Image (tube, rainbow, N blue to C red; front, side, top):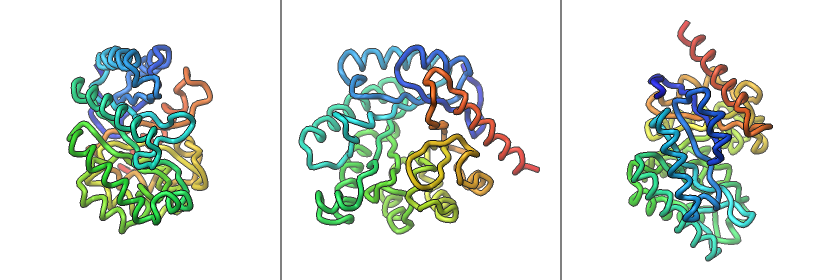
Length: 275
């Protein structure tokens, strides 16, 4: 069992593929996040997921299930006029939340993904209406999920953490927040001032971080230190009571070196801050 108790944690991410999980567990992560797909929310997939969670629980109790990102080639927008997608959101979130509650792990759900303003306006009439639709859905899942569900930000204006006015509204809903540093940085157009202000404003509600670098222009998921995020400014405003993973794009899904190197980089930032 991993006994690391101090933030930042070595947090690693993998699919439900046993080979990926075995590679991650070699390094005894303090936090483990499962990246799931629609195949993982079928009856067979859910049974396999439970088995994989039981395996990881021998190493750590800090486990997060990441709700599927895509469905039939499109991002899983939690508020959508597509009846098929809405049905999938309901079925998959209900099933994964049941797993999370029964196995005492966490479920992470995206508030939105990368839907551009023009599409939001076409679907909902305005950005404000799109945000209201997203918040209504998140309220529903917050009430059902309690302390086993959290909501992650995106680069889409319907659920971004880059707008301080919207952040205040989000805080008023008392959500448990999952915070992706790169998403805010991209939504803030590469502005470190905006990122740091957002992190500070939302810190009390943040329970989990996706620590990832970016050039601030598109979703690039870079290792820490390889983008334009100023981690010396970010580190002091992170909530030390949260968990974290390093959500870095890997060239080889059986080699988590980039995730682990990012942890080493942040540990260096932490050590320098103590001096």
